[in-house]
Image (cartoon, rainbow, N blue to C red; front, side):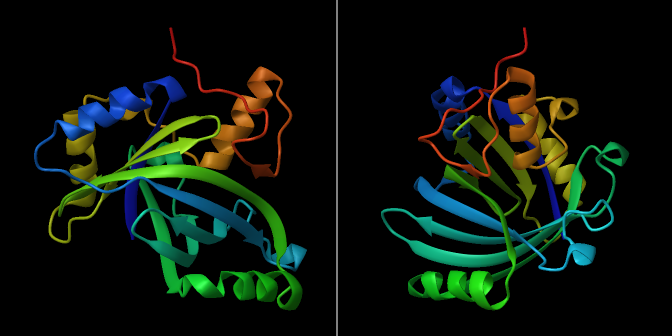
Length: 212
C-alpha cells in the first residue's frame, strides 16, 4: 500500500525547492535521473484500466542516471475518492527487469499482448529520503511536482506524510489529488494548449503558474 501527496510548482521554482530540501539534515539526496514512462490500457474495451471503477495505470518505465540504468513494470491504482482523505491511498505493484530487455518487453506488450499505447511522459527526478519518507522532485515539461510518500514500516503512514508536508513548509490542503496526466490535461484546457499523448520536453507545453 502506498500513501502519498503531490504538489505542483512552476519550473522556475526548481532550484528553491532543491535548496530547501537540501537544508533538512536527516534527508539523503540521490543523483538526478531521467525517466521515460509509457502507459498502456487493456486490449479489451470492457476491461479498460481507465474506467472510474478501476482507475488504474499499467506502466513501463526506464530510468537512467550517471550511476544506474533500470527498467520497471508497474501497476498503480487509487483506492478511494480523493475527496475522502487528505493523503492519497494507492495500490502499487512493481516488477523490475533487465534494462537491456526493454525493447523486447515493448515488442511483447505492443505486438503480442496488443495492449493499447495510451500515453507517455518524460521527466527528471531527484529523490530525498530517510527511513520514514521519500520526497521526489519531478521536473515535467509543464512544471515541477513535489511528491511526499510514506516509507515507514512502523509509524502511521498518513501521519508521516502530514508531518513531512508541514516540515517542508507546505499546507496539505493545497495538495493536488490526481495524477500527472490529470494535471497536464487540466493545464492544457485552461491555457488553450494542444494536448499530446506523448509529453516530451521538445513539444509546446502549458505551464504551472503560481497562484496570486
